[in-house]
Amino acid sequence: MTELSVAQRAVLAQMVERLPDRTLKTLSLAVTQMPGARARALSQMLAEEGIDRNRRAVAFAPMIPLFAPRPDGVEGLTFPPAILPRLWKAASATAPALLGTLDDIRLRKDDLRVVAVADRYCIAASGFIRDQPDVVWPAAPGKEAEREAGLTELARCFDLAVMARRALKSLPNWILRPTPDQLAELRLLVRDAAEITPDGGPSMLEILFAHLTDAALVLRLVVHSSRSASKEGVLSGSEMAVFVNRLLAEVESRVARIGAFKATAGVDPGPQIKADIAWCAETLAELDMTLQLDPNGEWGMAARDARARINRSLSATLKSTDKTLDKVLPMKRVQTAGRMTREAPDLEQPVAPEAIQTASALLTLVGAIRTAAQIFGIESQRSQLVQSAIDRIRTFVDLTIEAVNSGEVQDQSRVLAHVETLAKFLTLIDATEPARTVRRRAAAEGSLARTA
Image (cartoon, rainbow, N blue to C red; front, side):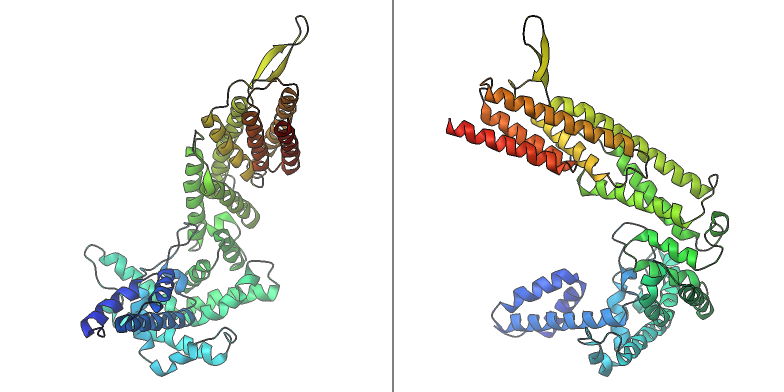
């Protein structure tokens, strides 16, 4: 097999450059197992691309998160991903002999030479953005204003990259319990950023925000950046208000999803709804803890409204869960002696699969909101429902086992399988010990039935 031609290499280079990191690694492993000269050439190209991306990740470390949307969906400052490789290619070409300095830095990330080389490439990138904007960010019809604003912000961020690299080391301290000296360091950082470039203070916080996994923690940076920023009246009129507005906008979006969820047969709340509830609870709690919200202010009213709407949605879910249990715990009146009757499980007909699926979805949600219930004012209702569900399932299982023991059940395997389903329901609401008890009784009865 012949080597790759120049044209083939050019086309492949463009394709390789666009590959996501995970795909690049997977493809690299696959190609190394392939025979032939072309496969070896492609393998070498993939390896070189991997090395180049690792170097870029070191040099542009403060900026890398700005070239992808936040995983949590909260709005943030972002730039088109296609800009990153073009910008790195231009910046790295200014000093190709220094690129090897950025290799294998796992044990020397703080090496002064590594930091100096990385900073040099960021400074070069800043200049390239201004000198050759058409190469960095090609014009697109109808998006001229967006592009111009983006180029200005991109250059500003790279102007701050050297300072941001140092600041990221202190980020964990600023979002926990900063000392007076650490608070002074943060305020000095914001002030120095404003002196380096117009609007440098908010841009610096944008960079730090991009590195925060928990979006709500940006509130601590905002508040710590100024002595008076914790008050809604002051902060809402400042350039830092954008961070609070973004959080509340995402809360609104997630509240809408929570309210739209309806548990029906085969519909699982899944990780999305559970994550939405937990995220809203944590974010609203952080707002209360960090900011002095005005009850009649825009933010205070928005937070209160979000809580009320989630409260209504979850309260309705809890009520419907109690009713759904009636369908998976069917009871009937049976005669005991004379005219006396009592409640007993209705074991003659199997429970509909749709009812089991709906109950499973609802109980999954009930279990998921355990930590968030207090914040939304439904902890008492949730606790009562959980205890009621445990008691009802226990009673149903006890009466079912009694019926099996007395020979009143024809299809014992089906009935015992339903008992196992009820044990799973208990695990969904974190009733681990009652679930074990139910399973032990069902297992023991199953063994006796097989022996008989």
